Image (cartoon, rainbow, N blue to C red; front, side):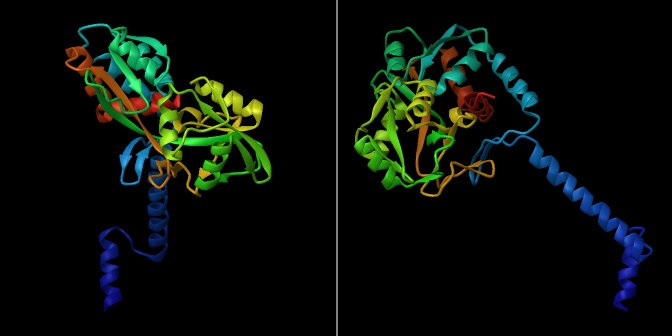
Length: 300
């Protein structure tokens, strides 16, 4: 009786025999696989319960073009000069390249950017830390993982928080019996300030100018360990990003919220800044603006 009802149900969908059922099963399975494959090949960027999504698929150029078009259409009533954190250097270049009224004055570091903002040399400064000043407003844009890295052939993949603190307290140390030099950044760096907060002290070792390129170069030359925001160094082939306490900064294309060290990228303006400045700040903090920020920081 039950089998007869099942046969009637099959007939409703044009299935008249076991081979038909087998064929429909193959077609349905293929459809599910195709949908799954398409989803993994397209771009995922934004936010989710797991954290921000940063993986990039084959349609990156098309998506970036849409974001660039959105930026170019922001009605700015003035020329806006931008500067600040070296962590935002690629973002500043992307902004100036995609809007006629945005001028990049170069990335000199978080603190130098604040000085230029107060002096009236720029209208927007990017900062790797929150700026507390009676004449300025700081707006968070994006949460950014701060990663530690070594030369690619260094025989270690993970570092514990305790070992990390010991190396930066002494200025040198050993990773899996491999000697390393602690490399840190100048005090104008907002990323440096965030790392100092995490360590609980000012690190020792070798100081380099506030530049991602200089940090990577010194790590390579001195067989050292250094740090930077993850987006900037994710595609550097000469280095190896270490997991911290067994946690990777990214997991399956999503930011890993269990990763132990994050900073925040801020956009800083003078209080009561012009309409054009506020228009750009609002766009940067919108969902589509944040997508543009992440893509630009990754330099792809």
